[in-house]
Length: 322
Image 1 (cartoon, one colour):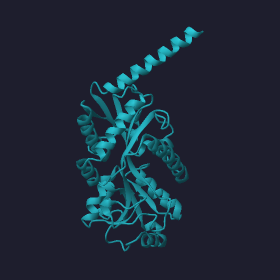
Image 2 (cartoon, helix red, strand yellow; image 1 turned 90 degrees about the vertical axis):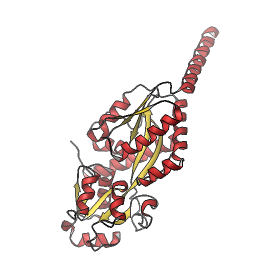
Image 3 (cartoon, helix red, strand yellow; image 1 turned 180 degrees about the vertical axis):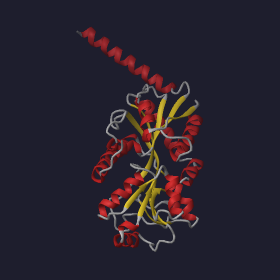
Image 4 (tube, helix red, strand yellow; image 1 turned 60 degrees about the vertical axis):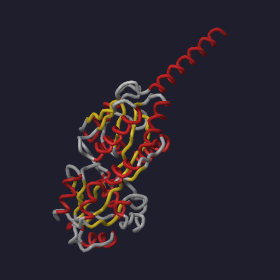
């Protein structure tokens, strides 16, 4: 019995030593970074900035692998099935926390399939109007909508995106029966409001900021807990009397469940260092994102809160995706 205990202890120590050695040597070869969206979008741009800095910081090439489709589910499924050895990671957007409530079946479990490393950056959604609309504040806008709900529509980037759900949440909160018009991405949604084809927009901040600063759109309110540095004169939804409307587009780094905690810690340390670098900070904030660089524990807690929140909104709004 005693010999069995000694042998078991020696085996455990050997395993721990091997894991520690592997973590210290990590990475010993190129690393794959999955992006579950097409090249050129906000998540892809952020991922490429991060991949470049991880390559510089860890001495091994980090290669971006775009696996678009099914609202991000295809790429997230590929990452969930990957070996938990640190050589596959994924950069996710808010579809990661929305899809569990939006789809009947998804190829990952938001709590069990991954280890969150960090929510690296996030951008709020912003409500905008065409400059010809006689509304300077959210109160003004809702008064106009209440007078003639069928006259007003809200353009969003697509069913189940956080801007779309932000519009749905406002609709549920105010009990106003305005129409939401989901487009096939932020570009077409923003363009429709700029062209005054749709009077109101709710989109992520990065693709909208140039039109706000250029006077082609008027920003009414942002959905972040605090004002965005990119449009600091625009109030938050809470400031204009609508608490509980917070929503943003996260940019999170995850690794498959089972990845060694030493590797997770090393990746988190790299994220914290890179996000503090002036050139990264400037580039990320220039895209309309705020630096977050949260800890694994903080990001894990955020995932739980947001999955529950958006699942409730999806059900209350009766949103369905085939």
